[in-house]
Image (cartoon, rainbow, N blue to C red):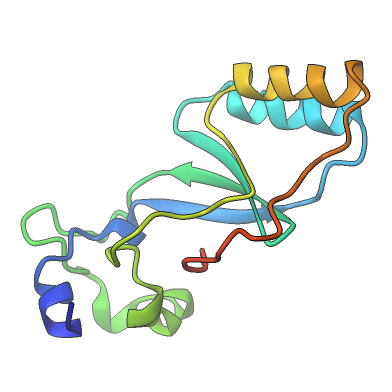
Length: 134
């Protein structure tokens, strides 16, 4: 898909969340803190390239509901200015996270397996990185 076609079909997907790095959990208590994050609506946690992130689904106030364009384009933050077409969330394909938790029950199960069954954390070394989250 060309950049022009991609931009014409844009729905502002990158303007509908904030993903921030969090410290890699080291012990059961750290994982339980992440479980607490996941008790809240519109929160997910994922691991990409060994780094942990909290993803908060929350639309930018400057995203136009009519055409999904930025209503603050000339004054947009640097993060938005640095965003490149190659990083676009509209690009085909899905993220290939090493781990992805969408609710507290998933984390609770992960904690049981990791600590109660003495299982070490596994990552997928063959996982292909589709795109970066800003």
